[in-house]
Length: 260
Ligand code: MF3
Ligand code: CO
Image 1 (tube, rainbow, N blue to C red):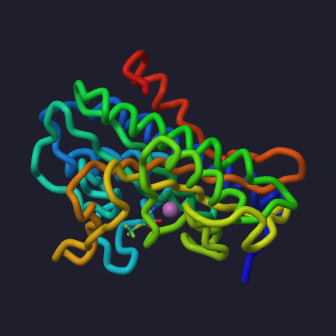
Image 2: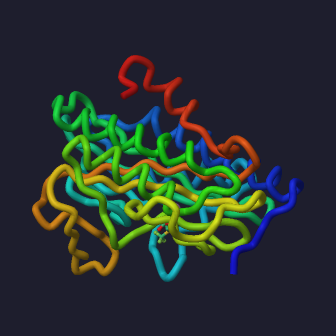
């Protein structure tokens, strides 16, 4: 069942997404060689609570933290640890905020210090593919139009798309219908209707698309241990143009010319 949101509900969701975006901007100030992902977790939790939100990953299906922090070959759901990030790493920070009764969900893959050209290209392509997918998120198109746009963009550039995990509807529940895969066929899947809100989140691998789940039961990593990148924003479906509820602008302001 797909829940359509009223205009008022979309404004409440925009506010939840704003806090999420600002929290990501706060995290951006701290990502550097030597910091631990547990420290980033506590910074995020504090910032969300101080600003009237709830970190809604915490306790979700028993998840132990407020953010997911997936390093290098980790794809998603990496559990924060006391291991220090080092120069040349990448870290995907993925988390949800509950505010006004609505969830918001975003991911940003940060370079840590100086990363190689190869890895920067992976990050850039993954982020661009998110925007390419967002362009398709308008009333009357289908989910497959988003999926296919992302897949085509990334595969043309030599990358592969994770298939086991998808984007999703979002609202009063963190995960609602429809699923929004990062691969698929144009003109297929559910029709997009004004009032739908979806999280679009390409997970892109430098090597093969295969993943394995670590013994902790959460962390997904690439099977070939090559790096993986992930960017995510929430979008409300409207007539004519997508209404992006979240933004990376707070991150960009902090990263300045390190912004990829
Ligand atoms: N944004 C992630 C997702 O949609 C995080 C979920 S919270 C977790 O899967 F608890 F599952 F990590
Ligand atoms: Co998500």
